[in-house]
Image 1 (cartoon, rainbow, N blue to C red):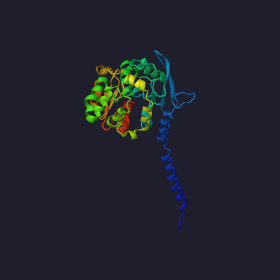
Image 2 (tube, rainbow, N blue to C red):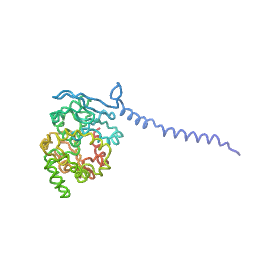
Image 3 (tube, rainbow, N blue to C red):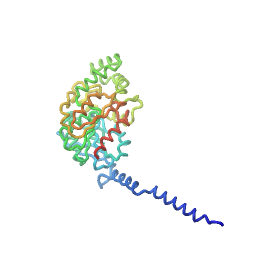
Image 4 (cartoon, rainbow, N blue to C red):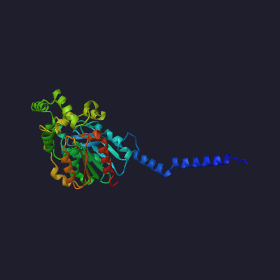
Length: 350
């Protein structure tokens, strides 16, 4: 007896089709993911869209100036304000954050401090003092609507100094603090450069560097010619300078040299001369920082990793992350360790 197989084939086809439809269009999974993406990319306001850029007027003793910020994403619980290094660099070297934080739904905000990057560049040196920068950060916080329920303050290098100072004065406004690649004492930082890092150099190279420094001949091309392979490639970013990431080179090219020298001195090789920050030391005040704090250090950093581990123990609620392959820019030369630890800290408790 012949059997008509078409109804059976049609039924089988319908079953497969239904199965594929259910699998491919799971309303719970895809809807949730879509809602998350939609929320993350929600505009900050309903006006003309500017790619997240907000220019904020900052009041100073020398008048009102504008600083530049740019928001990436939208997360009501996690908003990370980035305090860049330098002083006088800008947000450019932190563009690598875009490869890691958005896919985790973490909002972050670029911010060029006064005198840097896209912000105004007044030439009055009296503005380049730490207390004024702390008040600038507070004005930025208020303008962006950041508060203790969502505000994570991230500071790298010089930004770490600024972050510590802000936390000591305005800690009640912060949900969490990240101090990256910065010691709590400028004298200890300079001592580490002299006692540890300098001794790792070729003695002949070190002698020539010291001779140029003694003469104050910091603009001599030979000075940087010696520092690049013997110090910067070992302790700033552990790639040959010809292979340094483009955002790093772009940021350094825009350095406000006057601001940098006024506050830090003429070199990353410790603080020297009459640099404003030369005597800064907040080690004894670390226990006053009570918010959850992540301290990030690196084995080959310009900063002493043991000192940074101590900082994490001294604050009330601290965690230390060591980037074993990294240097001062560990967000580039030990990326996976750096961002895995940073993201874990930011997501904890949220």
